[in-house]
Length: 161
Image (cartoon, rainbow, N blue to C red; front, side, top):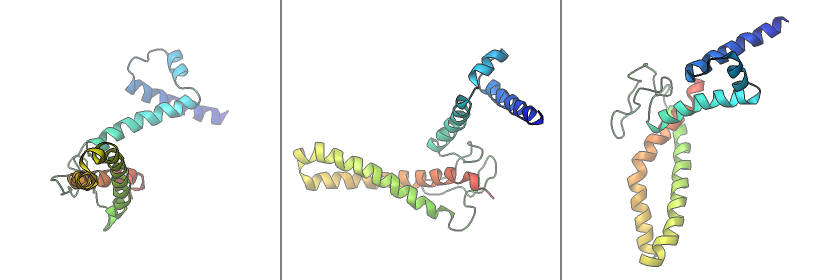
């Protein structure tokens, strides 16, 4: 029976989290209906995923989800201006961002190549279609650079020393 008390305490923490996110949950029966079984895990994962996705899109700190990671087009802040989290925790930390950059680059270049093949090649020829795709790619390089670092920092926030 002692273990059962631990489960009840956990449920109270979950209910408190739900109350914080959904102020309209008033009765205990409504809480019990909302947080039962596997829906409990799905709801909690969603509550954590949405703010993190919003922070990635806005290029914010992986810890507090508020401070800006970049101070210029290619210049990263050394630490979060809000919470003080150091972005580059060790020399070479952002080497892993190269893999994220590769995935992002290959993905959107594949889409661009297919669209160019379908829409541009019949109208302007292969050479100008390739020139168009390369031009769009060069314009997107700063965006890919920034988002690869932001995504890498957010993926690795759980490994914070």
